[in-house]
Image (tube, rainbow, N blue to C red):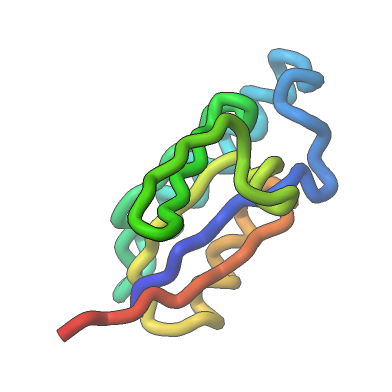
Length: 117
């Protein structure tokens, strides 16, 4: 099953800009450890993952009555704090949650994707 993993907010982690260089290196080490743990786990494949830019740089596209409108900024407060994402193939949610414990303590949303046939 594929899961979209959203790293939302800072959880117990302070904002990236407030980290010292040593703290940033330690956090990046945890991301690398997650990548390695996924690679080592049978049946798990890390399909994509990226850090996201500042939420103020986001653009929202809405279509109403056939008209497309663009606006600056995030869509909702929950998305304001989104820092990154992963797309992961994993046998089940339990395996994925076990692997995600390697990451820094972000608030994380996990969404199964819909398989279109």
